[in-house]
Image 1: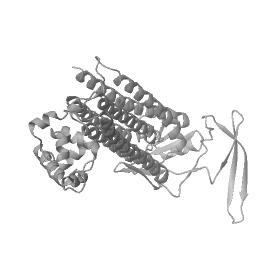
Image 2: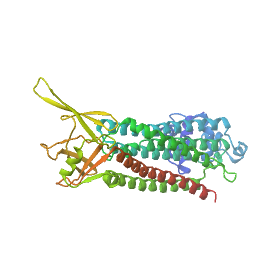
Image 3: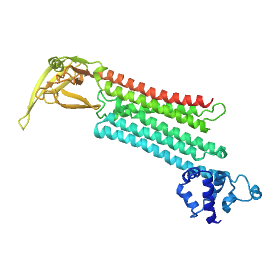
Length: 438
């Protein structure tokens, strides 16, 4: 083999075909640096690539090995197709390995989104911000996987190569992409408790147990839906497999994907606005008790009441003095069902705090009246909200039962958005199948 003539001959053939070194490298699943070395006679192509180069350039493998065109009589004697099934499988195996590695990169990006959301929630007590950051990683992972799929499908894009082996290769790439996108969707839905389990305050950290209890059923539901969709689109249509993707089908797939991303972005913005401007104000949709004066609120919060809302009776009081001269009074109450409660004048104290919103974040300032506190003997009160106005009224109080009702409403609204996400995905898939089969 004369390497000095092969390099110049390969360069001339490539230029005659109007290909760049990078474009040729993508077709062969090699680097453009390798193509450059061939054409500079620093090394020769691997023997398994000679038939592929012959197919691309429209010459024979013998001509490439000789580094020159043969006479028509001699070239006519050369076989028309030098590619063997073994050589083709080797090329496809290389492309498939590269695609699988890229898919692992997409999954890694999605996992980083989970870690970022967890760090924001547990490390900085910013549950909603953690979810938003996680979504950035999830969307980036999905976009990367789609790009990797397009690159993989374009790697072997010659009609002459459209054999059963190549068709199977393309099918496996799309199946891997289905799996990766499904995992990303499970992560996306599984992280949603960061914005729906907030007890009216979406910008605080929430308990990991709450996330797990709600995340698990959502994630399982999403996984089941993804499996059903996968079975639906893998079913042969009119005798033509779904994965036999032609050039026109790829264009349609890209258009459907773009429209789906726009739809998902619109739904996501709507969900974000609802959570920030509506669900963050608990009294707007949750049953509550409203007090227009501080005096009325004080009378209510200092009325001895058990967690179920039943009145309590004071049965005893004791005072304990400590070595540092401080003292603490303990009040012993009994409820109607006989349950005893011990309250302290040091620990069962409630203050009213200003809350204000800036750039979508909820902040808490110092107590409204630092010198004024309330003895919190009404144990049915689980949460208190005050007005953002300077006079802090009206004041809203919520019992445990009212909070459960509000949490149900909040969860139902966000589940509605999840359904919108899934409906958009199913509609896009069905639209693609319908258009493709025309």
